[in-house]
Image (cartoon, rainbow, N blue to C red):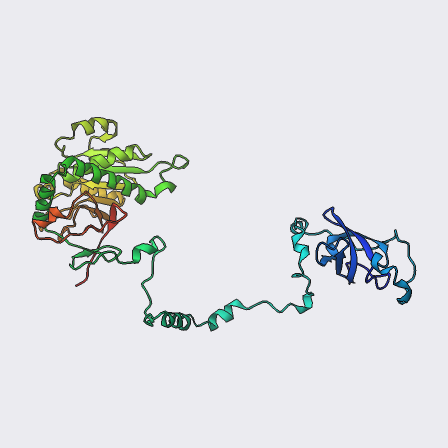
Length: 413
């Protein structure tokens, strides 16, 4: 067997010098010696017994068969083993020690925690079967009872990985019901187009500027577009693939102005932007000059393959007029099959044809009750405050918290 060969008989009590595999050496009295373990009591008596495994010993030299304190009483002791040369080392089987063990500190050898033989170590602990036997609910109920709490087996609602635990605690009480709700079940009231226009007027009369609303909405639209394109995985200077292509459709309504603002931001974020102005919005000459190199002349100039379409032409006035270019735009969107992001669509009841079908839509400030087929609905924070709703007898609490764009879901009646 590998390890220390006890070929010289019983060396209990012998004074030895040990050369370790890490280059250190020590002297001590042999307490016990087996084929795999050497126990020493250091000569200086300043530390407790040290256990050395065979792979930690490079060489072992016997200095005396008995320690100095026992030489005087050796006459009354049994006859020693056959004489050997004091300088003759005990032969050992040298073995390469693991790198981790070579870097051990002496503190590992000062204790006896690892001195138990392997045969005494029990089999591996079966965590899986033991975990099944652990009745967590009973333990938790016992703790709650000790603390004076109510015992309940109600399973709390699962929390998404992206949600913050602290936000699950209710910090506000919502007493009104809405036609929409957020992911956190916060109700959001839906408005008719007439009421929403009145709310916007109240906000502007109270100090909220129209240009601010357009700027904030355009910034939010550009951020949402980047995330829909793949975020930093796609819009990245280190990405060796072609940059994404975004086509921006602009009409004369509010959605067209927001679309122009979004195009301006996207052009500065490694997105190839193509802007098709179908009806020129008022007060946007400066922005059109800045975006001049991104403008295209007609629908026929648009590529057949694009990554996303930002639709700013589905406002109510444009759809009611149904200009001649609208049919060709609808045909191109259907042929391209690119996902379409609509800005605040406002669909009248009767139309000559179904408008471009959106995969996602963004409502500005407050969602409309009747918006038609708008795909997945999101709400953009444009800075509306509760007092803007009060004149319309609408109870409003901001649902945005830490976000500026949130998904909405229709409530089931």
